Length: 370
Image 1 (cartoon, rainbow, N blue to C red):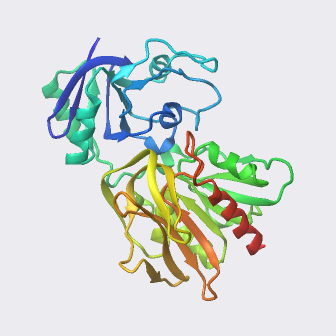
Image 2: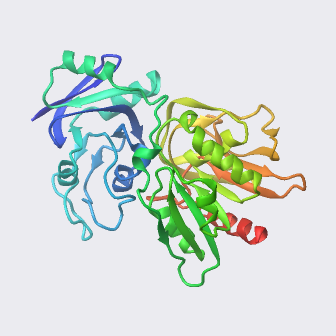
Image 3: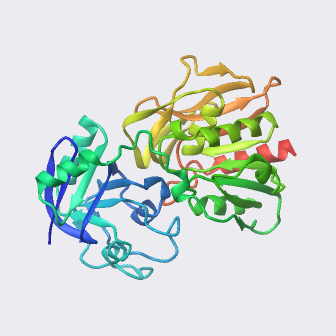
């Protein structure tokens, strides 16, 4: 069956239906990872986005029951150039296309994903539609009527409905409360490896509910949407900081922490998505190859340090491709670190693992706070 992809500026790509039949809308973005497509599909940060894979051959290892990062596929649509006709892996339980169809994810295959990616790099991420049922002219109108990502408040659509506990592996050293803005399953596993028990809470949890877990610190997860809409989350984090609760945030959590410290956020032209982004840790000078999925970023002060009512905010990491702020650090008047965050995904599912040391840094912060 034929399918068509239409961007909001009118550019169209014709290909073949892949996954479910029907119609879908979202923000068109591209992901540069050559592997890890199952983790990409099940990352809640991709909610309401149509993801194009820049790697041409996708689906060769099928889908398994061990690698999902959440309870379902979250992408609004999926774009591949050359899908594998059948999976070839001892871990595979079903094909990628079967999973897309079963979860009603409309996709398109056989298009020039390189041309699509170059177009998005030149024009920026934009609204998009994929259809197997509508002609191009009608689809363009529906794309233009669909909501943009700027101004989208999506955390409540992906968060857990009920709190749950991920216990520590072996000796229990610390307890953490994780606010689920769209958390990936690998994150509490990384903490469990370090003896940390994690209470995962809905994004709507208030300060008293968070502290009632007996947590030594709070973790702010990744997630989808525009951080400018997260006023409630910002207020909660600001109060936690005033109470001197140690905090570690990633991705959306980095943006929430930045706003709580008085910084602004803005939408990137086409974002960072993939597993090959170079980031420098300014404290050590070390360059890490990191996993990313974000279309928004924190506005940094020009001197990369600013005074807030809670302490001194420093930029700790930067992207070497474009200078985007990739991390923040909060110091108190004595110079001790009270909170830190990064814009990327140190849990690294599916890879690379250069930034795993950040979970060790979190453990050290917990030990010092105790």
